[in-house]
Amino acid sequence: MVEDMTAALHPGGGFNPPVPTGRGGPDYGRFIDAVRDLQDHARAVDAPDDVITEAADLLERASALLAPYDADEWTTPSGRRTDLPMRGNILSIPNETEVGEDGRLRGWARFRRYHLGRNGAVHGGLIAHLFDSVLGKTSFVLTGGPYQRTAYLHVNYRKIVPIETELQVEAGVVRTEGRKIYVDIRLSDGDDLLADGEGLFVLLKPGQP
Image (cartoon, rainbow, N blue to C red):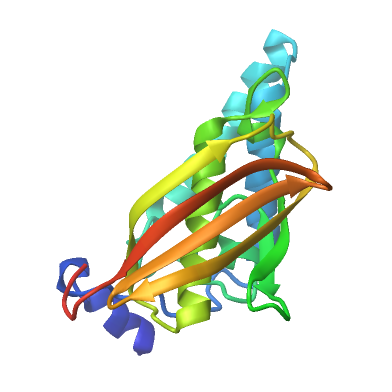
């Protein structure tokens, strides 16, 4: 009933945060992992023509199997499976953070082969993507303001960010001014600072999408 009500709300009428769900069943996490693995293979594979042809046939059949069940963002389990890493959202860069004793979020992030730019380095836009996601969580968790949007994001690229390496990420709130939440973030590989940044998130007014 709750999910039906959520799906009925128009996204233009407010922020409409995702409602947790168990839809997709016990294999939804395995499904998401399989999609991620497929993305990695698609980025890396150098297979014979007949293998590519067979894989394309399989993918087209899988796509046709799923197509009748496409749903809007309020109904699909993607982004709403709170029991799964990153809520089962394949768009997210794999990461996990929690609040440390110093009041900052700390944890790890790992870019996959799919996120490769060139010469072993992560694509710069995906570093910004990670920062936006982690800083959004930071501003929400540390201030308790659930409805907010990114107003500004600046990234300093210090060193090459490697793929397939568990990296350290930390972020915190610098200050708040009314509806404005100023945050900062660092991405490191041991003692090496790879990238850092700062952002501004703004709490939404009632009814803002």
